[in-house]
Image (cartoon, rainbow over all chains, first blue to last red; front, side, top):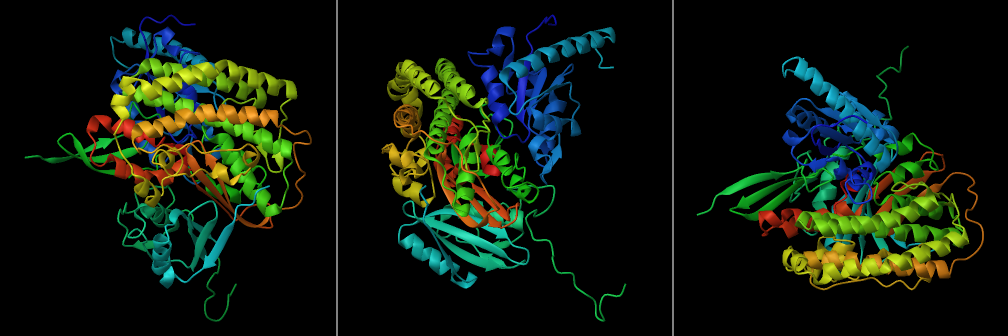
Length: 148
Length: 128
Length: 359
């Protein structure tokens, strides 16, 4: 597991999921799984967030919201695509209104498998994302705080 | 197995408003409005009930037909009527809340609209 | 002198796990009008019937929503079974009923937690979700899935629950019942909860009926309306009684759900006591030809699946009318006249399930 110097904050958005992954994301924050013990807090404000958890495929109406939320997050940031729909569109891939996975709109760092993704795998995905976040932070520090 | 009773009454579009007012006066609630595309025509079901036995008024309509809104009688009907407009491409006149096509924004406009199943053959037959 | 301003609410909003957008027209702090916009999760899955076999489609019907998942698959199966005249064996009907009541318990506990969270009552939120995990444990042990079960199929169910497991489930429910009762007591008597919800967002019985409210929204306004009374699946044999409360405010809608959790425990106990032996599925031959409207009572209210088939393996049309869609007009009525700070709680009391509503 990566060494975390700060408490990463998480923002969650539902692209066009069936809800299954969303409630599992929420379940991660409640007593049995308790993501908060890692110092992870769920926030509603994209400007506070380091990790973007996104569930479900992307549809016509949500693409702008997803893009906008991502752009508002400060660097460094990581994106975790939760569930099979967020990876490829899943069972809804052939629906007329689904454009595909999250990577159609924004770059994804970690894919969490499952339909619905289990809380254990979501936590695993977030923890892996923290490693990537740490790398990105180190790279930014090398460049004197710039992204590139 | 319990079979839920469902009576379907076919009516022309012109009688829709009169019939819905009758149901409203009898104390029925509006269960749903649903549309079925059937190739060359559409069926629209207006379902009402007072208990667990359901009754549906069925309209048979075609592309570009104009459907009067029943939202004067049933205030909540707007949600279904906007759906008719957004997904099937019907014009519903007199809706109390009109989203003007923004209730469901889809990548394909009116995805449930029938594809024209009859190709129009030009005069003199299909020359190939 | 007051000015009217429009405040957008959502789609990405801390209190909502799902995106719904409301344009709130405010006069100072008071909401004058609310205009909802949905469509953020519209997938268009009804059209997939053209590409999928009607038997495989059960799995897609289940994924209309990840919370009412099992009830969606049963409703769809009921519709197909009624068209094809398939007599589902009694044991399958009873086990379906048990799983449907488990999903009701988990859905209502989830909702009670979210509502507590919206009120800023974190302790109650965590408590409700801890209870929910216990329900999910049994759900997972019997079906293999926590929120998406995939255990219903046309003609019956995929998996049987062994009798000893049924006994264990009842024992487990007996063990957590005092905690469920305690949670119910908090929602009924706690001053914070009462202060936030009593008299808020009132919907009279007449309005509820006229606007087409269903489920706990209608029952919290005194309408005796619960499709389970019609006796589908095994409900006819379990002596089902709907729970109704008279005030039509947020608190009553909340208490209907809180009491239904306990009622669901009773229903599961009775179903296990009366559990018949026998096969769990009926062979399905041929393709459906005909149409059917199937109604069931989901945690959120009455749900309708309309299926039209023409004798081929692909259906002509599958239409779902979910409880949230029909509860949106009552929500718009409830929001008018309340204060801005109360909007999250009132929106939550219809238990919005946007995944369902937009399909």
